[in-house]
Length: 154
Image 1 (tube, rainbow, N blue to C red):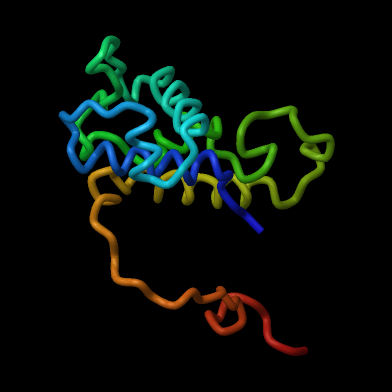
Image 2: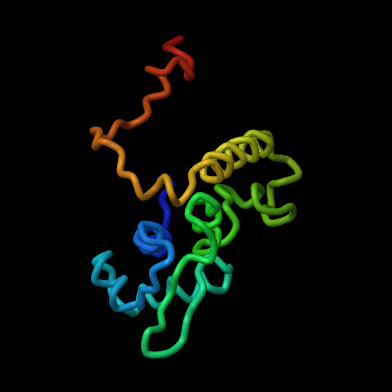
């Protein structure tokens, strides 16, 4: 199963709260209360986001964090990369030489194509879009046979 870490999941929630009122400075405790994520986890997330210049911090009694850019200028790919590192579904999608079977791998270029599609999809969704919830739909498992992508019985 491909799955984002809790850090990326929670980080998306923190960023979405900040995007709802982008000029408002919020501290870690306030963001923790609004997202239902522990304050230490929110603090860790904010430090990582600040390191990648997605949020800016203000010191002092009225200090806290706010977005570094407008929500429509921040992609989900940037948020996830700040918290997870480069988007790579497999070792060979990130860089050459990390996989022992790379020179003989028949599926490497297809994994790179899939990785590119995922990265592009995340790049095309902005933080602003994340502030507007979509209608709830039942979870559907992808069935390659039903979609016509897998060979049928032989």
